[in-house]
Length: 359
Image (tube, rainbow, N blue to C red; front, side, top):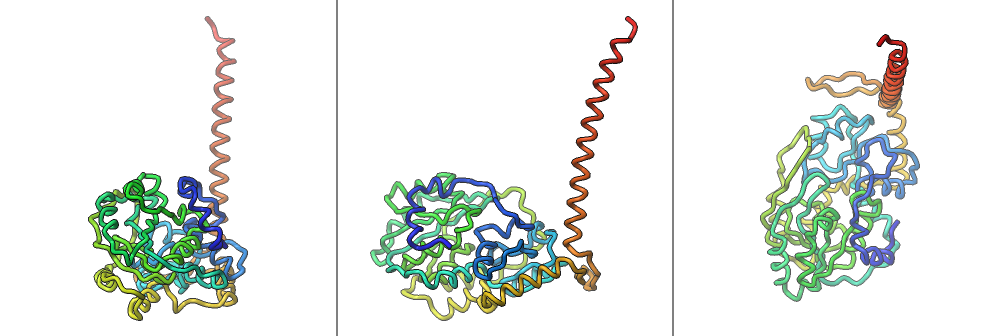
């Protein structure tokens, strides 16, 4: 795991830290590797295999959707972190739906023995883009508003999302002399651990974006969180498919709960954050290891899946579904090679035939 001592060195070259990169993973469901979620579960539990479940990369009350990739992933289980996600997954997938604490909570367990730095100032998280959506807002105006924060909240550090750094949005803050940091690329396995270490140096955390998971992570990392006059923003979105979008029933509650800056997190705020992140589902390393190994067994067994009409049907084990898909993929590739060779032979014999044709 990334240490507190290593974290400042990462920030010396933000261009390298935020640089786009390929997703290097053996996971069946690629999203398990976003922000290092799979690596965290392995580090905590000692599990060494490939996860046979979908681990959502965020607590989906903020982006409350069941994505097609999650619903169609060839694994038997999908994990939820809160009852809102449970309802969505049970409604729109045929998978076994099981509880799990969000991976960031396991980071907190893994770093318990690391040093705790003195906290000072504020770390600010601007509303950010994603790998599929680009944020559009007045970053210069936001930087001007941040410059007006009282001495109580200084010094100020702005934490840039990797894509927004690449888009140049950081320059608005840089021009005002503000310190810049980043938790890294979303494919960086140290992302959530680095996020924790960055927060651990600050007394306060803030954002202008009410739908960010940074709110929950920052609170669990020990920061007193508040919203700074949420700015006008929109997203340019392309190619995002969602099956189910439940009502965001807690938007107003969240905004009101964190609207006024406080010197410390209140019990009400912590209770809400724990609800969203699934703190009640946090288990010991041994219990998590056993859960992941049980899921491995289900991967090779037929399971009863929910049908749209409320009934159930017996499903082919997902292990064999993947094998069949792999076989069809290989056969398809061989078919393409065979067609190309036959085409080459046809051209060759056609050319030879022209030598004997009458003129």
